[in-house]
Image 1 (cartoon, one colour):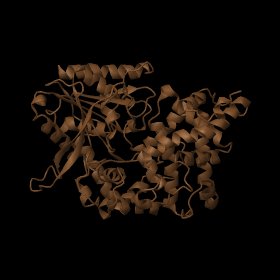
Image 2: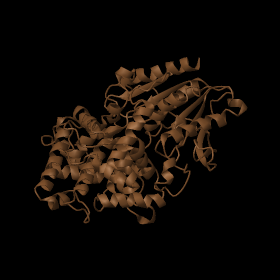
Image 3: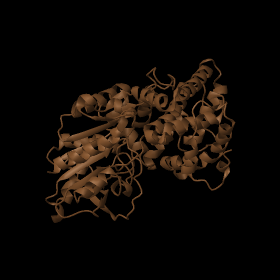
Length: 522
């Protein structure tokens, strides 16, 4: 019998080690397995939701304003890269504040603000290269420049490591409030000019004046790494773009298609079918006028209007986002999706109940699941005067530049057909005003692709990598653009140091980067 799972001093790794022993499909036949699952249900919620909740922020915002579940799950999809590995030596990371122009392209606007930059010079020798890691839609923290592949490569070249914080994220806020009028200064072109200014400021120092510059990024900051080389080809000698979305798109229906593929391929058909069956049951209840029953099963808050189309869009999108957030950062070598699928099944033999309990578990067990459309709009409007981290500023960029609205438009996914891209475009309009109609947003997205070239940017010395099961890969470079595709990997999967657990494809991708950097710096 597996009795140690009931111990009170188990850590996360011990519990997950037991989860890895689960054989998919043997739930009803194996009595020992049933007992194990029972204890896993008791112990796992103590560990995983804590980390998940930390990445979302507190369930309450400032002044006890509740963050809607929909917004929470979006934050998980747009969080920063996975934390770096624990370094065996203590790194000396310096915080610097660099003055930036509020508007880099208007000489008559003399307003300035302070941009936060982290610098690790532990390996630096005067004149050696500067290795810049670009911050994206998140708050920067030291681990990204104290451990990982980029740090290993910088050490090889006696380089200085610099981590830039993107305007309007973290502690780098150029202007308040975050009204629609002020958010006009939030765009990728301004952010790229900020990075160039950081480089120029550093290179005024004697120790850096002869230093070559290479940059890297993950996710949106990888997009920046590509576009910086496009707009400023002479400022840097090379770029590494890990999982860069490049093609702006309003209706990003292929995102959930890849999420579904990941669950089927790495979790098994049984797992895919649980989600698919549950979603179908919820949709049938709403369609048949039994929304009250669906509301009860899903533990939705009293103000959720089961007859309101936009409220329905939000709950289905929220459910999909919960599962997508896991798939987006899964590691196949850890059997992540198989583990989570085992936990999903163990919640309840009824698929609809199991998915509902799983979603609530991932949301850290709220009293009720708050997914009302008007509540989300009200929260974003509240955030204009009460800075909430990255949520509002990033949502603005998606409305104004990128789209990337993950919809249920694909039939090849298990999340139903009840959250169109209109959910997002309506929210853009209701939060930011009449300048964000669906037609206007389509024009904004076309302009972005025209300016930067979509998946075919005219750049050299840029190494682009994509995970084979990364949902974002569908708007990124592929084999036709000479990107390296890492089988079964997901988002920013190649950020860690070369490890014995790396798949052959992952290791080869990392080794190729190291070789290219040597060539760029030669």
